[in-house]
Each structure stands twice: as C-alpha cells, then as structure tokens.
Image (cartoon, rainbow, N blue to C red; front, side):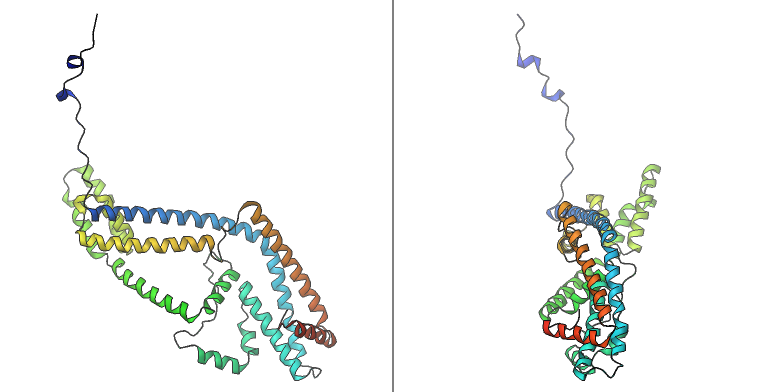
Length: 340
C-alpha cells in the first residue's frame, strides 16, 4: 500500500520557485501624485467622450429644429420694415410711437438673445439715450458689457452662444464677486502649472538618450525625450507630470514638490468635474433627456416654432396698415407686453 508522506512527497522549501520582489510602492507623496494623474486622465477621457456624444446629439437636434428656428428668424426680421415705416407716418400719437419703438427693440432683443442674430445696429438706432446713460453709470469700466459676437469656431450654434452671453450679463454682483475670487485662485494655480522648466530639466536628466550606451534603450529614450520636449515647448505641464508618474522612482521629485504638483492636479480634477456637470446638466447640455423623452421634447419644440412663425406672419399682415398696427399695439398693451 502506497501511503502519502508529506515529508517526502512535497518538494523542499528551497526548491520552490521564488517570486520576484514587488517594486517598492514609493512614498505616500509619490502614490498620491500618481493617483491624481490617473484620476485627471480618467476625467479628461470622460469629458472627451461626452463632448463627442453631445456633438452628435447637437447635430441631430439642429437637423430637426434648425428649419423651424430659421423660419422664426425670417418672420421676426420681416417685422422691422413695416414698424420703422410706421414711425414716419403722422398717424400715431407720441405714446403709440414710443410703443412702436419698444416693439422694434423687443423684437431685436429676441432675435439677438434667442437666435444669436446681429441686431446691434437697430438697438443703437432706437434705444433711448437716457436708458443707455443709466446702464453706463451702473457698470464700471471693468464690467462694461461687451457686444455679443458669435464665435465662428465654436461648436455651439449662434443662438446658444447668445443665450450664454445674455445669462452672463444678468449675473448678480455676488456671483461676480465669487467668480473674481475663483479666478484669482485659478491664476495662483496656473502659476504653478506654467512652471514647466524645472520638471523638464528633471525628466531630461533621467531620460536623455546621450546618457545611454545600449542602442535599444537609447532608441527608446530618444522617442521619450521627443515627447518630453514637445510637451515642454507647448507648456503642457499635465503631460510632463504624466511622464513623471510613469518614470518610476529614478525620476521622482522631492516629496514637497510632488505635493504641490498633486495639489495642482486636484484643482484640475475639480475644474474637469465642473465641466462635466455643465456639459451634462447646463443650459447648453444635451444629456438631460434621451430616447423617447428627447423625441417628445423635439416634437414639442418644433410645434412651438411652427406656431410662432405662423403667428408672426399673421402679425406681419396686420401691421401693413396703420389701423391693424394700432390694434396690435392695443392688444400688446392689454397683455402687458412690449413686443410679440
């Protein structure tokens, strides 16, 4: 009978394969720094993916909504000529002329704020000088509102850019104070982020190919050094920090320096999360609803735009004659509106 003898059947301890010792994990500062780099890269990738997703959603959105929006813009622009001509007639009272002027201004602002149309010439022509003076006194030289100019290189349609511009002008003083403080903090952080020279020199000392004799290692470090140089010339501290995190202990910086870099990366995480939230839930975001709900919203918006265009065409026909315009002015006054 062959019995199992653990003393003889198992290999001796010294004959077992020995595991290679794991690489030292590094100091707490090094670990925190590498983790911060990974988190930033993860957030950057999420932001890129969401931008692509929303870009496609925005493209589909404007394929469906664009024709209706253009029809409303054309209908609103058509109102200017009969309204301006009415101001040349001796038919209306001064009160009615003021109301017509408000009608023109309200229509111009609607075109500008909702659709990004350039109506500055009309606003300057008809805006009361007294109102302009009051607005000038209320705004400081630094806070003077700038005229909206659509960014042709932006992914956002002009009307979305205009809406964002209008919201920015309506911000309260408290919001502006908060933004100034946030801007100051960001500028302080940018001072750290812009200081790439020390980090570049540190990486160059470690990875310069001239320091290697082995041809294969030298070729690898030549490519790596090219990446380091390109990042330095572009003032891209994030890439340099990422390369530092991949370099291992040989290229690790002093713990105090790493702590400052980690703080900079944590600030960048906050900013990236804010960008993600704004993209998801902000006024220009396209992630609030998907699928059937989005389709329902699009159908409702298209119906609204069609109804608005038809109503504006009806108003256009009415205001061709002074009697019809007077009736429209009365209806607006009764409803407490300045414009349609």
